[in-house]
Length: 368
Image (cartoon, rainbow, N blue to C red; front, side, top):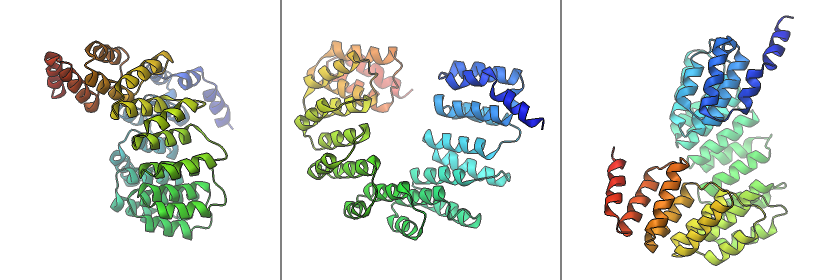
């Protein structure tokens, strides 16, 4: 009887409310320190809330490991949060290693554990590891769990084994729309558009995800006519479907059609702007690329790597050194990540604009 008031007290603790609103590393560090001071870190609920913030808001898995190691009795939710964090931060091998350690230490696993682990196996194309997890799934009695089966279908399809995915799909009686979309996405991801179209036609229920998967698939194989027929047939469209169609036009160099679609979009996000800017830059419309980049900034939209690289490419081709320098400084000021792709674009831009010193400076910093 004493547990309930304690949990209610923890649930209403202002630190947890602050944690929910915290988005930056410094804010989360401060709350973490107070959780340690008040000994709230020893409560599994409070610890899980902290871990969720670390893995979803700042996605710092080294810090997440530090938090995890302070938890004396991690429950399945806490362990799953770690695995999910590794997968979302593109560290699927770490996710698999963590899962292996969970089993070695005798920690409990549940259906969500397998869902995240299987997704990690699919991302790393780890068919051998995925099959081992499949064996564990059957052994532990999760073979008929909807979340797990959907994870297995997705894993096999990501690894190129659509036959195995389809066998699981056909043999499972409890399929939901996610199951259908997983199989559909599997065919599309493997370039099997004929099989994808057959499955799509068989679907009694379709959602916006189903339609977007097909539009994206036809766009990837340059069949934008078929993609547009599907797009125009959609009962409802969301931003993903608009961007899929836009990307289809961009991939085949139909810049005019892409711009018409872009201008007719009811809502745009950074992906929409980036697709259009990149399309202009890749197809020789350099002035249009820079004009659109400026419009994007005027709209208060923070550019991503794709839009920045497109704008830098345009500056290089136009010899617009001042504009290129401004974009470079803008990136530094706004802490936009400068990975190898962005740095290479900057090196190329400065060289084409005749600024060899700046080009060499960036090139030399790349090897440091």
